[in-house]
Length: 125
Image (cartoon, rainbow, N blue to C red; front, side, top):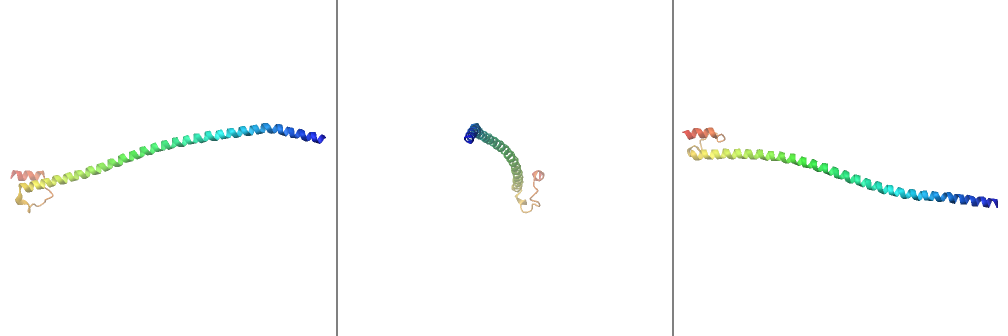
């Protein structure tokens, strides 16, 4: 009988100590899930903020690059148009000279150098 009471007491003590352990385990698992959920939300918010900031930085970088590139292209186009304008002005000067002096059409020595000075010389003559 003595061993039976010892076994019963041992079983009772084990059950009594198991109940708080089970409660502690359930509570720990619950808090662990809450911490995991809170951590996932904070991580998602951090990733969203990082993605937003990096996209803003990339957008500003692209805008700056496009501004520089468009400025460079605008300057190139402006230079081309200035050369075209100068060529057209030279052609207009040549045409005006030929119109004023049709007899010099085949004899004009340097058709690439007619300008203001030559106009003054021929206008005076």
